[in-house]
Length: 183
Image (cartoon, rainbow, N blue to C red; front, side):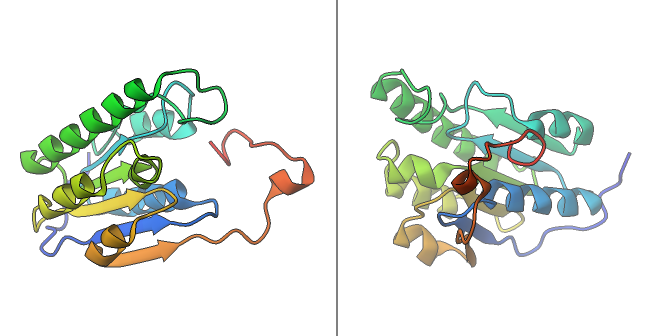
């Protein structure tokens, strides 16, 4: 069992956005680094729903330092989505309220809101709610927001913003997503 080795004193707000692959993956890399210092990390997934992702099993291996909670109903208006918009919207709002609850609990040193930018970009969540979440972040907690389409207001409120830009993708050559690499 790791002992907490550091205390977060100046928590940052980071945004991983852009059209390229790697936003959630970048956040997960930060998880590994944080756990190495004994920090406790919580990830809330806004969009990802019923599919099985490798990070779910990986989180179990990193417990009790890393927790993932999925609250999304799946990808909205793409792939196999057959749910009414109201269900997706209700799930996004419930996830935002859960994010506020977790931030206020003080239980975690780092909180990742995975695909929250997509929830805003698709109109499931107003940008004002995300700004409320950012404002609620304790000084002793890092907050990472992922997903393409980060609104300018969120970018302005962040300390760090990284844009993933696609240059080349295997899908362009007929190669489908692979377990362990893509999900």
